[in-house]
Length: 167
Image (cartoon, rainbow, N blue to C red):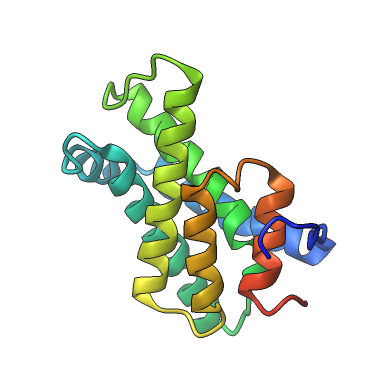
């Protein structure tokens, strides 16, 4: 079950892989045209920018995984949720800096983060990845909706389930 003690710390290799993905995304956001495109997409999200933020994150991570695979590198799927959370926060920061999100209280930020994570998993899974268990991805979504994914330990436990529980 998600978040019930099935946590495994990331290996040194997984930490390196996560850093590579995060650096690539950071580089993407540093590009003025890409940044402007992200802002435009968030604006298209209407009254609920969290869904568009999640969609952007899912697409960015999927592109990273596909690019790596095409280059002959296989990134561990165990790192995806932790990386997605970092990228969600980075995109939320973009939205806040651009005045697209105005967070009045901590609970509001938590809600945006949770909704964006659900949308990120949905977008990623819609694009497809044979290395991820679809049933466990659904469990993650339900866990977020029920408030069971608030801790890093719960997220890491879910990661193990999505990829079959082992490295």
